[in-house]
Image (cartoon, rainbow, N blue to C red; front, side, top):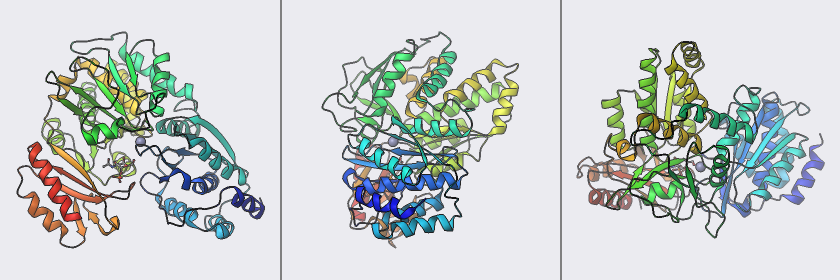
Length: 527
Ligand code: NG1
Ligand code: ZN
């Protein structure tokens, strides 16, 4: 492979336009789409090198800016087991993207040498994208990067982020996890869901009807595909499908619903307590909501999903008499009331880790059954190999263990998956005979508020203890403590965002008025 001709050609087509340093953050590279062509090309190159480094395992590339506004785009790499790119390679990615066109060739040669990559060995890159209008152009750039190194590339077109993770794992497990195709994904989830439903579409207070806000993103399209294949086992009305003038995530989607604490645009008039679901632009997050008879908006976020799932799985494990360690992983954004409920009522061990799925996923792997959710609705459940073996063994005689096996099939263990998570929640509510009123009555959320603060350099803020304590600038934490002490059940923290150029403030307190005031006061300290 001649790096010289390859890069001369690449420089013609994907010159680096932005002078600003960009960093591979919690969600890969993000930014304005018009600045990303060279980033994408180089990520195609890197994915191919990574695949060769991992002896030809499939590496995934997903093009999306998730919950960000429509003009943004982004890219992240998926490692062979479906996990986020290994941290040491995040650094390699950052360096590769920031090097000048002139130095590119030499830089790639150095990556190859440093990592002892056999450049002639085989490689495979899977690439997929969300439905932003600039995604196809950026996908071509990734594919060209792969082709520049004479690698193999398979383009999946418009898919959700969790589908890409599924494809990568399915391919690398030689289809033990499923078939690495769109149909393979639908088949696995729908088959498990329908077996779990077992023809029982309604039960107790549970009604088989749902409104699904697709955020004008890829989740809407895929939900419509589920609908076509689902045999009415779930009655879903999809809104914000992305066919009208609405923009991705604008006034809709999981981030809007969670942060603004109000319903999305485009809501039809529905009866009070109708279950509604919002996903984000690439369908890896999901939150539930409804309005009560007084018209008040009520949110059931990632913490609620985690506690619902934890309670359900605990019951199943106990009734199968399986000795498995179940644990729950949260971040500092988890509502304090949810943590209290987990510790005092569910009596499940809970740990708190820094924001970002890789931290949660990693921690969850320490348990036999690890449940992790960010409050914003991103999460899943992971089962250790030994717990799967124990459940399979029990399933030979015990019907509850058979249920548990189907639940494992329904879950996308590779990463948070809005549609898979939703199907799991629907399964649990149906089995319990619960509607949203039953679900929300398990505990009362503390009123909470998030703010974004624009600062000159967000990285002057440094934190420790899973981001709950601020260590820099000096003295800021003391000031926060003093403010918080004035509020009943007050809690607040600040941290630099990993995906936007802002500092985030989170506050909770016993009343709505208090929490608004507390968030405002803490925000003032940051400015
Ligand atoms: P940042 O921008 O670092 O707060 C946001 C979310 C994360 C995670 C990432 C990746 C919040 C408060 N933060 O990160 O949980 O989902 O985006 O998309 O929701
Ligand atoms: Zn997302």
